[in-house]
Amino acid sequence: MKTLAIFDLDGTLLNTIDDLATAVNHALEVNNYPTHSIADYRLMVGNGVRRLIERALPADDRSEAIIDKLLADFRLYYDQHLHDFTTPYPGIVNLLEQMRQRGIALAVASNKYESAVRRLISALFPEIEFVAVCGNVEGVPTKPDPSIVFRILADHPTPKADIIYIGDSAVDIETARRAGVTSVGVTWGFRPERELTAALADHIISSPAEILSLL
Image 1 (cartoon, rainbow, N blue to C red):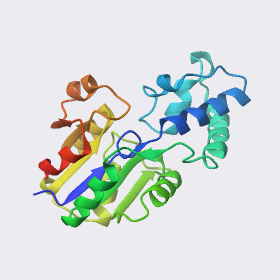
Image 2 (image 1 turned 45 degrees about the vertical axis):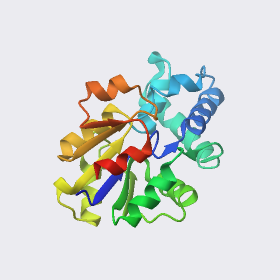
Image 3 (image 1 turned 30 degrees about the vertical axis):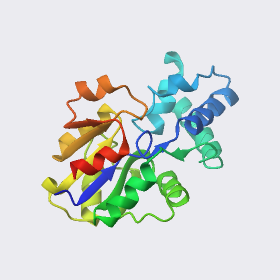
C-alpha cells in the first residue's frame, strides 16, 4: 500500500498556464521582445521559471544577463498575480480529501520557486494538510534531479516502495525513476500523453479519481 503521494504542481494539481503565460509575456513585452500564445507555453514549462524565460526569448538573446533581467520582471509581476486565473483541476480537491481520509500523506514537488509554491498551496488548498511543500531553492538542482524528493523524505521518511509520484510531464516521470519510486503520468496537464508513454511512466491516468485505485 502507498502511504505517501508526491504531486507535481503546475499541470498536475493546478492549471497555472494562463498566469504563467501572462507573466512571461509581461516580462517579454516590457523588454521589447515578441510574446507567445498561451498554447505555446504548454511546451515551455516544466523545468523551472529560469528555463521558461530562456525558452521564451529569441535564440540570439538568451544571455545570462538578459535572462536575469526578464526573470526579475517576471517575478515582480507574477508575485502580484499568482492566481488571477489559476485553479485546481476538476476533481483534485476531492481526491486530496479522500486520500487524507485514507491516511495517505501528501507532498508537493515543484520546479517553481518555493515561495510561489507555498503561496499557491496555502491559497488554493487551505483545508488540505501537506507533510511537505517543496519548490526550487537556490543551490538545489531542479527536477528531473531527484533531490527534491529526498528533501521531502527528510521531512517525512517513507520507504520508497510506499511512495507514488504523480506528474504531467516526462520531467516528472524521470524524477520518479531517478528517485526509485512509482510514477504516474496524468493526461489532463500541459503535455501530451505520448510524452508520458515515451518516458515509460509506470501508470498513465486521465482523471484524478483513478489515482485511488493505484494506492
